[in-house]
Length: 311
Image (cartoon, rainbow, N blue to C red; front, top):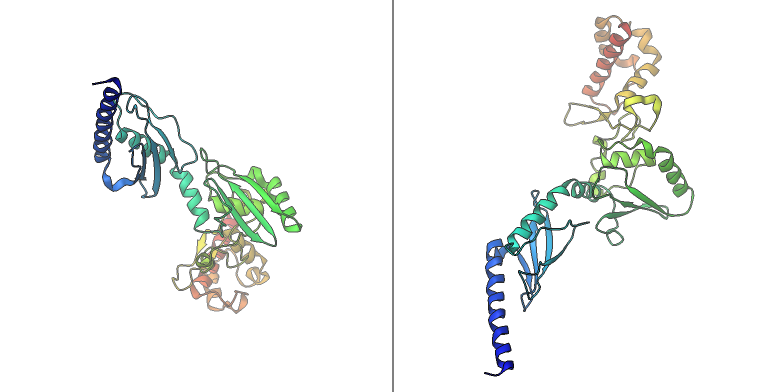
C-alpha cells in the first residue's frame, strides 16, 4: 500500500470515528433539539430552552480534530462567557453551560418582553439588545438595554427634530437620576420622559385599569415634593369588578381636600357624620362615571384624612 492510499485509509477511519462520536453526542443531547446538521457534521444548530421555555438557538462549529480542539459557539444572546472545555468534555456539557448562562440573562429577557408586549416597537429597526419605538410626530427613541444590569438606566438615543424631541431629551437629562431600579422599567421610562409612550392596541383596551380616575395619568410626575410617591403608579383600585377603576392615593387626597364642602358638611372628627354624608352625596362633587364602590372609597378616604389630622 503506497503512502497516498495509507493517508486516505487513515482519513476514512478518522472520519468514521468522528461521525460516530458526533452522532453519539447528539443522541445524549436529544435529536429533538437538533435544528440543522451540515453534511460533514461540523456545524450543528441546537434548540435550547431556558427555564421559562424561551427558545434559543445555539450554533456549534466543530473542528476535524474534535474533541482535542474545543468547539466554537455562537448564539442569539448579547454576550457569551468563555466556556470550560477539556479533552473529556462532550457536547452535552457545552449545552449545560449555555443553559446556565441563559439563567443569568432571565431579567434581561423579561425586560425586553415587557417592552415588546406593551409598546409599539419597530422590530425591523430593532436589534437583539435595542428597541426602536416610534412615538409619532417624526420622533423615534432607541433604547439600548444593558444586558448585565437590565433594570438599570438604559442608554437612549432620540431621533428626529422638533419640540417633542427637544422636550423629551431635556426631561431625560433632568430626571435621569430619578431612575429606580426596583420599579417597573416602563413606569421609570415614562416618568423620566414625562410622557406616555404609544401602546399596542390590546394594551390600550386595558389602560383604564392602570390610569388614575382623577388625573388620567398612569404615573405621578417626578417631583421631590411628592416624596416616596414621586413617579409612582396607581395604588388604589375599586373592588367592583365591573369598574376596576384605579387611583393615585395622592390624587385622591388632593381631590378630597379641594372640596370646600368636605369641611362644611363633614366635621372631620366625627365618623358618624361621615356615614351621614355618604347618604347625601350631593354635597360632594364626585365624578358621575364612578361606581358606588368608588364613591364609598372616597368617603373612606375622608375618614383616613380625618384620623391623620387628629393625630
